[in-house]
Image (tube, rainbow, N blue to C red):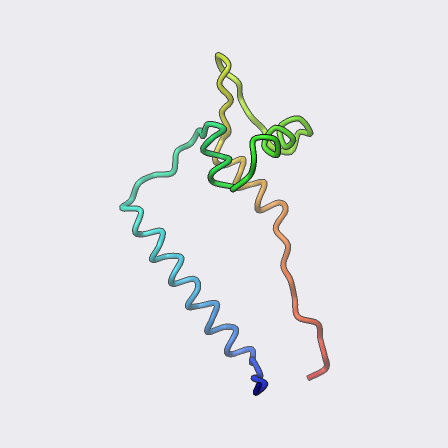
Length: 97
C-alpha cells in the first residue's frame, strides 16, 4: 500500500469543497426557515439521541427547555449555542515538518 502525503493545500481544498457542499445542501431547503421551537421527538431526531439521553440533558441543566401543558419545547437557538459552546477543534500535532 503506497503512502500519500496530505499537504496544507490539500486540506484547504477539502475544506473549501466541504463548505461548498454544505451551502448547496442548505440552499436545497428552498428557503424554509428553521422552526424556532422544537418538540422532544424533533430534538431527538435532530441529535440522534435516545429519550433517556434527552431527559438526562434536561435534568442536569445542559439543555434548556420550556414546558407548556405537558409538552416540552426546546429553542433551536439554544441547541445551536450548546453545540458552539462545546465545539472542539482537533489540530494536527506539529511534527516539525
